[in-house]
Image (cartoon, rainbow, N blue to C red; front, side, top):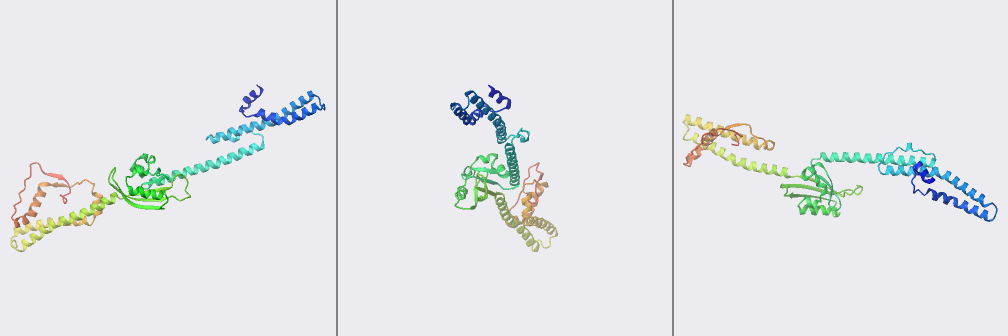
Length: 354
């Protein structure tokens, strides 16, 4: 009961084996007193009193050390669990325990600063990766995605880190290239592959092993470049060149026909000459617009998704087209008739394209 009260008073754990240590330290003295009593060099009563005195001495000697070791144990355990306890508030009298606490505090400060620095560096690295426009992913030895930048998360979903590259891309060529890098058969791989879902996309991929100095589970990094937009622009340019070259033939044929007419049958017809020259002027302007667009494909690319703002009168455009084609129609004995329903008038469009 006495020791239990002491434990409660000084906040010492009951299982610290303090009593066992006192008895163990006092055992040699007990044997000596027993021998002296057996040899009748001292009386049994004196031997008992002396043994009790030795135990009291050992208790007085060991109790401060046990108490401070107990505080030190709780302090270190609290630090290990993430607690924030000031070691200066501990009531220590032994120089050795003070030095131990100072060493623990110094080690704790060092690793706290180290952890804060690593956390700040990780946040900074993640922020830099998130600013990059192309998807970047880190994978482990099994092909599991451990980390992905913002571009990757936007393209493939926020739960991309729960997936394996084999489930992310349905491309055997890409998966084979990743496996060669993971198996260290190749230090890096570069390839172009296609992905059908969710939309048809064309990617350029660079897969590279991380250097052996790198720490953590990541062993390789995958960087992707989306070639889909460039592919669409390339197709748009080729289509535009083909269409423009086709469209240039019509105004050229019209102008050539009217020039031939003005040089022959309509040479002295002032009214026909004025009419034909007006049509030739319109067709020349149309050709000029086509050529201007041909020389500025970048302008078309920038404005391809913009809504037109020009007002176009449909009956007027139809009449202009009829007049422009009238000469070729007469040469082939073709009659052009137009029928415009009531209510057809102005629309918002690009006049040249219409």
